[in-house]
Image 1: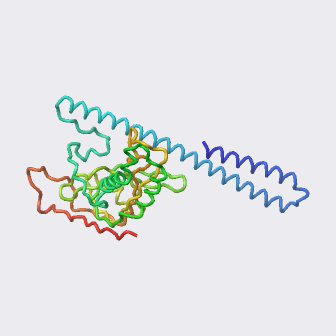
Image 2 (image 1 turned 90 degrees about the vertical axis):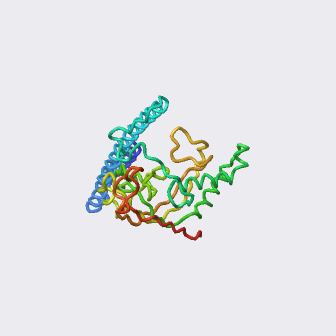
Image 3 (image 1 turned 135 degrees about the horizontal axis):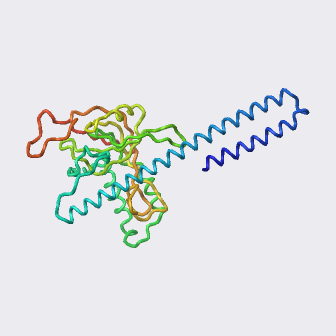
Length: 302
């Protein structure tokens, strides 16, 4: 709506300018009048196009909101089924079709989260939560954490804990989003796995896919795994209006006024030999299915 108002107001101004130019035509001269009129009409066309693009963006954002609301409703139903299954002593049902993650069994175990901060997003989050509690333990006990102190801490943490990565990952729910200041960008849910067991490490994160890697992500199969190489570093976000996790905890809550944030630069994706789900535990691992272990090389802090 804001874009429509801006476009409409600007167009009205240009129309007024055209009227003024026409009124001054006899005194100004025919040639100057024609040039000014041409420029004014061109500006009207540009504003109309800008208005159209903004209207499309609003429509796409509304569609995305509806999709997110549907996913939230489905997640709530899944939680209700899981709680009911645990309460009745029965096995929790698997997620239904259309969840986008049905190729990842709901009974899948979660791998232990490595302590190395750059080993996974969950590792980085755990490290930040621990450092936050160490830094503000007395203020937390007293209930008087100061926003300015947290803001300074967020800036300080951004300068540490960075490194190169080699993760075993998968991508899911890839979709293009039109940004107000950019053209369409591809986003996807990224999950990091333990390369020995293919158990997910912690939680998935929504990431911006570089254009050079879009084709690989879009054409990946349901059980496709990649070795992702790049750089990863912490970047906690200061939020002066947030003092508790909230009902959805998005972004993840580190502590009062601090949210989980990071920078991930994806340089290269290589199809992994681990291209399918592991065999049942009682069968034992296959010698032919041994993966390359990720190598984490921390950078020297600046």
